[in-house]
Image 1 (cartoon, one colour):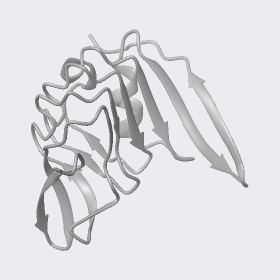
Image 2: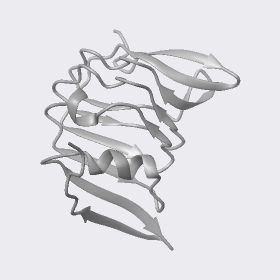
Image 3: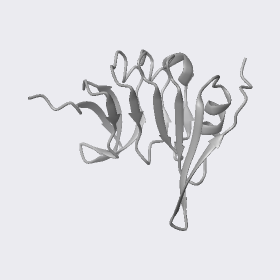
Image 4: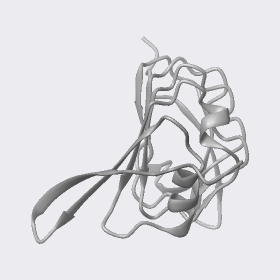
Length: 146
């Protein structure tokens, strides 16, 4: 039986970039480590044609390359870590069915906030822990992008 969590990985300078997701599962959770290396990026079109409904990206992820989620026509929820430094392209253009974006971590990077500011009709949740207390905050955002 084929493992449903199959990833093609590019390794350079001791870190991994997810090059392609080959699985067929509905809920995809990308591990923090692939091939023994921390996952810090997602390459262009890595999820093209996925049938997933949910994508959960690992803590430590720093970059979603341009069109990394292009063709994610069934994805309704994306969860990103606060460590993300760059989101190249539009989440909503890549995932037209996106309904919920979860931003994890106490501090949200400017890249997270810019990505959020360009969403229309998407619920944005901020999830974090502080002194052992877990919190969920619904961010009331108004789109500022044209």
